[in-house]
Image 1 (spheres, helix red, strand yellow):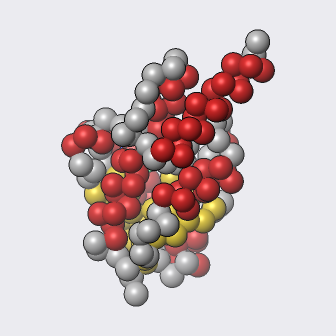
Image 2: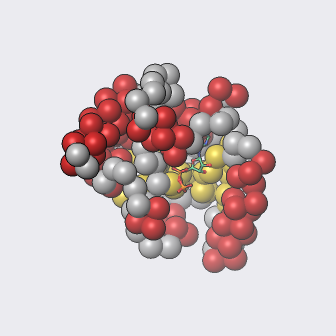
Image 3: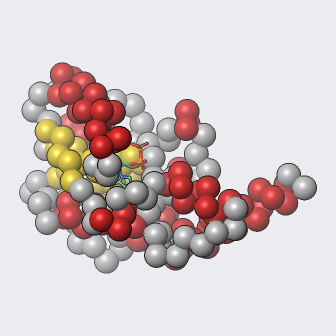
Length: 165
Ligand code: ADP
């Protein structure tokens, strides 16, 4: 049983993330999508909301599960009996940051490998931030996020607009 941990903020989950999870399941028996609080990034959705989106989206995917995690990633991987960390590489711009984290994680625990995968071209430029930005201005993100996420984004921005008058 080979387990990989796919960590991230997932604020919110996009079809790019899902594409990566499906690709990962071709290599690993089990993927734990590990949602970090990432409070520094001031997420739009609570960790419970982010987890609920993922749980609903991976319902039919055998081997995929979601959990919240906090603290050092390598400790979480070890506790979960994971052999690898799964990360996505989109454009070249991801590379430098990902290289830094991967090498630091290797220094912290040399028995855990970081595996990078590339999504399908149509998701190469897709980020959770762009999704939030487009929705905040009333644009459609259909086809880029699961339907439940699309609805929740619409609701969230309606509420935010309401509270800001
Ligand atoms: P983080 O705060 O860790 O960057 P994200 O939720 O933004 O959290 O991303 C989690 C992981 O998913 C990262 O490895 C990121 O590169 C990858 N990822 C994000 N969007 C996509 C996408 N559209 N296609 C493939 N991988 C992606």
